[in-house]
Each structure stands twice: as C-alpha cells, then as structure tokens.
Amino acid sequence: MTDAMQAMQARVERYLARHDWTDVPAMDGRDFAISPLAGGEYNLNFLLTAGDEKRVFRVNIDTQIGRADQILYEFKALQLLSGSGVTPQPYFVDDSRREIDRGVSIMEYLPGRPLDYATDRDAAADLFARIHQVPVDAAQNHLIREDAPLDLIYRECAGLLQTYFDSDLADPDIRVFLREVIDWARAARRRERFYQEDPWPCIVNTEVNAGNFIVNPERDRIHLIDWEMPRWGDPSQDLCHFCSPLTTLWKTDYCMTAADKHDFIAHYAAGIGDRHLRDTLPERIRLRDPFVYLRGISWSAMGWVAYQTEFSGMKNPDTWETLKRYMQIDFIRPLFTPFMRT
Image (tube, rainbow, N blue to C red; front, side, top):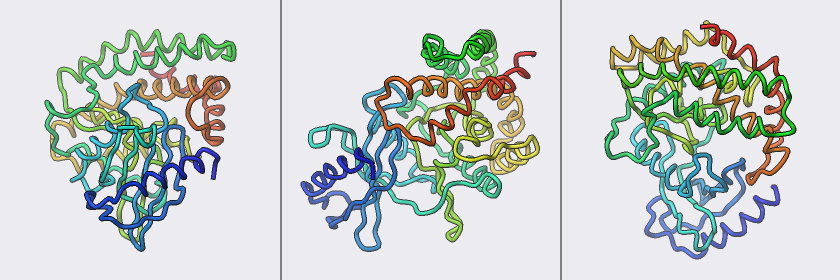
C-alpha cells in the first residue's frame, strides 16, 4: 500500500464510523471492513466488505475535466446509465468535503479482469451498443456537450500541447512536427459540419482503455467502470478511442489491425437499431480518428512534462513508461501523416 493510500484509508475508516448508513440501502447499516483496491492519478479506491457484500469507496484526488465537482459529475453520469446493465450502480455521493477534504462516492463492486483485446472485442462492441442507446433527456442531462466535437478536441489539444511546446524538456523534432499537426487540425476541424448537420448524440465515455473494463467470464458479463470524463456526443468518440493504438497500447502490447477494427465496427453496428447510424458509421469514424489520436498524444505530451516537473496527482510507474514510449517521433509521425496528406 502506498503512503497516500494508507493515509487516506485511515480517514475513510473514520468517515465510515461516523455514519450509521441506515439511509443508504446499499449499505443498510452493515459494518464494512475496508481495504485498498486501486489507486490512480485521479482517484483512490477502497474495497468495503461485509460478509459476501462488497462495495467500492472512491475518493477523488484531482479532476480531468477542470471542474471542482468532479465526483458529482461522475456520479450523475452513473445514475443516467443505471439501467444499462453494463456500468456500476451508484449508491452514495458526498461532495461537502466537511469530514474528508475530497469528494467521495460509494458504488457497486464488480469482480473480474481487465479486457483482453484479442478475445473480448465482440463483447465490448455489444457493450458500446447498449450504452450509446441508453435513453437520456437531451435537454436535461448535465454532461459536457460536444456541439462542435472536432473544435472541442482541437482547443483542448492546443492547450495541452502548449505545455509541451513551452517546456525545455521537449524534443525539438517532436515539437516541430506537433506544431504541424495542430496547424493541420486547426483547418481540418471545419469538417465537424458533418456531425452538426447529421447529429446522433448519446452518452460517450471518452476513456475506454482495457483497464476501465471489468470482464467476468464465469457470469458472461462485461462492464465499463470508469466514468470520470463522459460527454454528450457522437458514438464515434468511443469507437475511435477504443480502436486507437494509443488506447490499446496503454496497458497492453496489442495493436488493432485494419481487419480487427472492421470486425469490431461491424459487430457494433449489428447491435444498433438505428439504420441511419449504421450507414453513416464509416464517415463518422474516418473524420474522428485523427482527432482522437491528437487527443491521446496531447495528453501524453502534457503528462510527459508534468511527470518530470509538477504533478498534483498520484504518479504511476506504468503510466510513466507508457508516456516515454509514446513520446517518440517514430511513434507519433505514422499516426498523423496519412491524414495530413488529405
């Protein structure tokens, strides 16, 4: 257990002891034991156990969306998705920060393993089809909207890349090439008219790497568990992100082939009831792909600098190794040159 996890566990134990929890049905006044579950850059997660009953106690450390109400944003997203059958059930949230100076929540514990791209692609396609068809009131939901999806990504990436451009640590060749990429994206974002003229909005997760899935083969179940950064946008956001090498290589050595990607999209389309969405998926994905790659590289460039300077979250050694792998010109250039020629 890290020092941060150990220190926070003591605070969570005190927090739990001060409440009787009879007003939270999922807790039902039971005396839960607490143990560390997982810690990342932005959240610390603890396992609550009472007999056969298990829950996840989540402590928000930092935000990825630039909002102080990060824990509430995530909790409300899980409430919207509660009927999907493929996301954790949300039970409790507290953003008062009176007893713990962080936002906290309690949600369903889902046993299983991370996703395996070689064996679980079809199950993931089915999961996305279910999530993207969850009925949600478009006017009432709290989600960040991708009304101008490519411009939103461009502006986000321009800000993230500035951290890299301004750093003395930056590789000169990478800096020059990424300036060319961001200049290309500035012009190419006009192609978002396609999404604006033919919208198909839904809940999108935006962070669909293998570690954010829980697969339970014994129960024939798969869930997507991390909902820190959902948006109200086009389904291509998740589909492109899932297939991106920046995603598949984040925690694994897997890189999706063109045939793999084709089969994944075809399986997803088979689960979509809207014929028009099925027919327009290829164009939605083609326009989105380079911007998803740009977002991945921009976050990596920012993180690469932050890990070597000032970073307020938890530093993960595996994340650092991946950031170093991505921030190589021979990795970055092939991602974008096919698109920049068109």
